[in-house]
Length: 105
Image (spheres, rainbow, N blue to C red):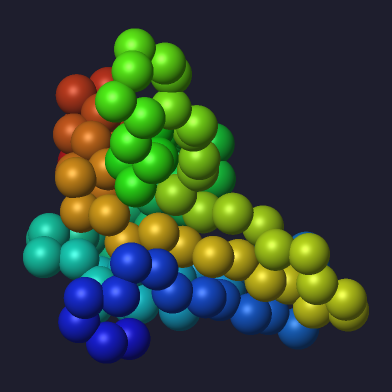
């Protein structure tokens, strides 16, 4: 993980095996945001389910921007693969939502 990268990639031996510990370590290193290891499952679930506006695509019109997930499943053969975006503002929204809803403490 290099500073300034907008994403990182995770691989696992099978598509069914999610490397949660590695995900947490890499995300914690990538973000200037204090994260708790107790939040790992919530962060993974929220990252794979919540959609966010892609802020890299600016149209200049009142048109809805494309939406994407913070964690995207990649098309792989015989292994699992995911791309994890490291947008601090979006991960802050995920943490804030989890705290407000009592999903994390």
